[in-house]
Image (cartoon, rainbow, N blue to C red):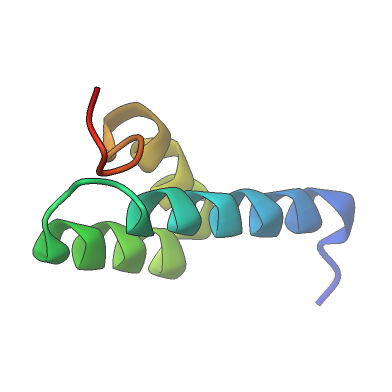
Amino acid sequence: MEYGLFGLIIFILDIYALYKIITSGASTGAKILWSLLVLILPLVGLIIWFFAGPKGGGHGI
């Protein structure tokens, strides 16, 4: 299958989202659910995570 540049960009953004999910302060269960959403539905999961997902590190302000 040929996805081209768009596919590569989505892949890179999904990796970034997974990194941010894993390093967030969310509970382990939430991290697993968000990660599965991004992995199973790469584009839709990425958009949903961007607007509603856990953000930032677990260090607090």
